[in-house]
Length: 219
Image 1: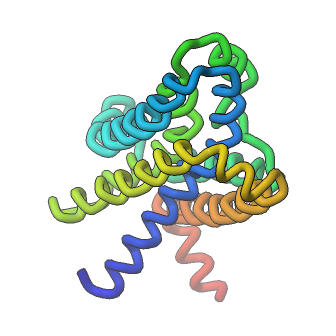
Image 2: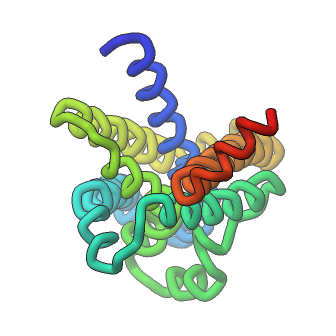
Image 3: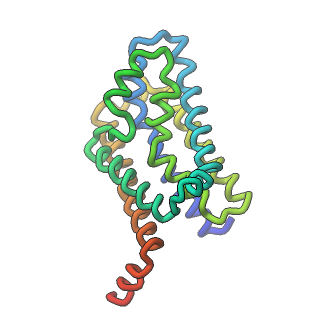
């Protein structure tokens, strides 16, 4: 792996981390598990991380096939994914949870369940529309088998971080406090806005190449 590929790979890991945002899942996790027994709490972080990993890998492996079935182009997905990511990033920039992550109805339903590991913690809180869109787009790249394995390992790394964050949720919350968590959430939101703009710009450039030619001539 040369330097350019390494930088691109690290940027992909940062994108996955920003979109899955394990830290933003901490307050949701704490709210949903406030009245749970310690035995149940020990199982939820691992189940959530495992479910999120499986969802992301399925999106990576089968996503492009699903797009072909519905006749959706990759540029169109980039634009749509960019809009979703922009929406999530804007909400996070204001230290709010986007409704693309969890609606009030989902939160109310989850509070009445014995296990919230898969829904809503894995999907849509962590492996949400933005993260899934990222994996489908990544699958469209002309990656060799080593590149595809590297992408899956990057997701595995972020899911391990998710497990550790949820496992240490109460400690993280007490150390950072509400202000600290809001600051980190805003930083992640800014990164997501940048990723969303990049997605939309690239999608628009691929769908309307004349725009790029016109901007080049105009510059």
